[in-house]
Image 1 (cartoon, rainbow, N blue to C red):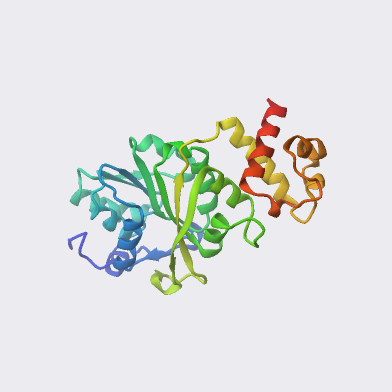
Image 2 (cartoon, one colour):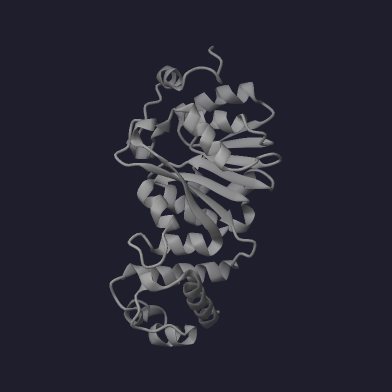
Length: 276
């Protein structure tokens, strides 16, 4: 067998019949220079436990193993990719662990101790729901370094009163410091997607909302941005409308995209208090 660290990824893909599948949202990143840069964007990984979701042919996995990370846990649902990562596990039995699972159905905090991070080229079709789930437990993560389609990355990092600002921006920036740290052209992937990709760095704030407050924020943002062309007195009618806005000190004729993160925080806290 070829050296699992040195074998070109295209040869690994061919040997395992690992053609990227649209149903799994797969676009494989094959450039070792780019995967090394992504691993470096996670900061100094000395003493850290890293989780990678959707390792595919293992390009980013190799780069993570080249860092001083104490351990790397690869979570993969595709049986063909599992066989690839098993070869890497045999080469790094003390540092690499493979978990064959659906990351959307698994609590990843159970897989390794703190301090823990996630570094991943996320499958396009599940990136957003995965992120929202991890934001709910942001206190458990030291940092998230995640690749999305460019539009999703822009939505995560958008400022108020801009086209991309919405529910995802509020949830991400309420719980984390969010930065778009790298743009990657389609040609870096196999097969090339139709759009650029973006790596987003999310560093959780020291203070995190309690679960009940996070649920309140999810309800407020879902209502506010679900009908974003409406004034807030209309879009929030089902959860308190004018009364809720009055308690939070926010004018009812404003629209969701004009509110700051701090104003959404006030709304969520008032809504949580009303529903407690």
